[in-house]
Length: 177
Picture (cartoon, rainbow, N blue to C red):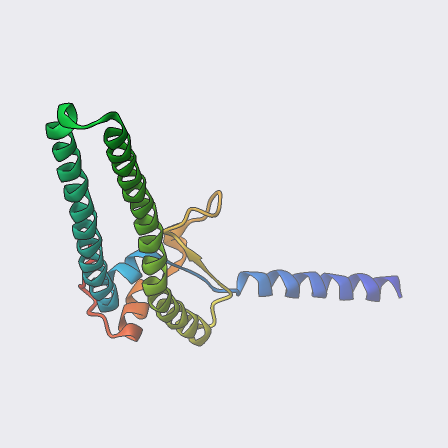
């Protein structure tokens, strides 16, 4: 009976160790995949236009502030103390509004970038999931984010070419800079 248990245990250990080695692992550089997608180029173009619009608004406010300050400095000696105080307060208020606009614009730009990036990331992730399932991969490591202490990249199947094909991206497409 002991011999039977030992034999069964040995068979189970051999089967479990061979099934572990039969697992398939792959790698992909998600940043490179996303950078080659046409949607990313369109997003960057739209973001650049949005940034330009925000910069123009900022410049308009800055010019208005500079003009008000220059007018104040020209008239400074001719103004009564009460009027000077009111005008100084107006300039300080404009500076504060300019700073608030700058902070709002930065936050809004981050929000806009995340909003525009989300469908692109989802599309890329879905493509990788599809080819990973079809290929029977147990795990796919994203090499653009160093999340593991070590793994042999060359021993893993690179799915970048397959993911590009799944998304209709030419194999020789270069990432956007």
